Image 1 (cartoon, one colour):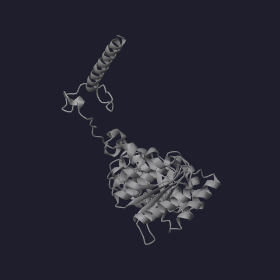
Image 2 (spheres, rainbow, N blue to C red):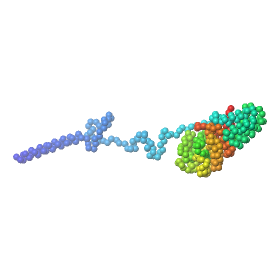
Image 3 (cartoon, rainbow, N blue to C red):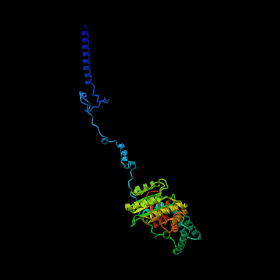
Image 4 (cartoon, rainbow, N blue to C red):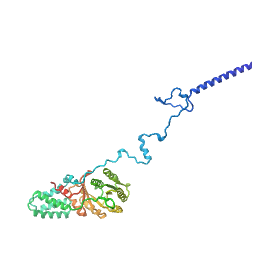
Length: 408
């Protein structure tokens, strides 16, 4: 009896085990393969979505792309360029369009109205005095005072008054037209009609013409250098700029902006760097490019500072290792009058001044400084500034200048 009961128990256990195996097998068929981890995604109406019955199929890997095949968004392109060492220039910082400067021929004539407004006291005052019926000693003293007030200078004033006295006596009767013609002739003679006022900017065998621009602080030297570049480009020259003013903040940036406007390259160095080294490199660059002219803007110097003036001499000596310096242009503020003559003397002792640029001549009635500074240095005024516009720097023409003084 005990054997029968034991046999029944064993049979029941065997049947239960077989049933469990069947159920477990069915569950395995319904579960996804262990190698395919469950992923919860939003439904996508694409053909690649698994269809009914695919769960039991062998797992298939979706196609994968390498890092090189993945296209990065456009916003990240600058970072990629930096990694390759390529300089990235933002669109907003693109170089400005190259301008075509106004022709220099007759530019002073076009700017004549600006000059005449500030110089009427000289020309019109002289004409008024000479038109008096009786030219007594008091009148001649007034004429002399008018000339001195306009900063013509003592010696040139005395010479002009003596010549006018003689010619008026010979002339006898004096019509307004005769007086005007007489005064014009004498003033043109006083200013100097035979001087060579051309800026030497033509390339020669040694290389490009080298022009140093010098002056004290505040006369508009860097701006004048930029405007001079426009004058030369307008006359068909190719120009390289040297930013040797390393002591004034943003001077190099200012000069570079002027150069970019006319397509002229600017050679510059670190702030506070050696000006002579930058000047040397600028001439070297001009030679390599085959440029016609190299313009070098030097640091503004107080004429009372001996060390800074000596450094200016060093700049000139270093540049001359490449070849001769063709021009040394001294920039003077016409509104400073006789103080400008003191500056001129000191600069002339350090470097050989070859020409003068008078700025702000439209803002002063002291047009006689043109005569005085030429007499002081023995060199001509070559350019004059008559406004703040880019093309308001004009080659100096004695006839047009005197016509502006005395009017029509």
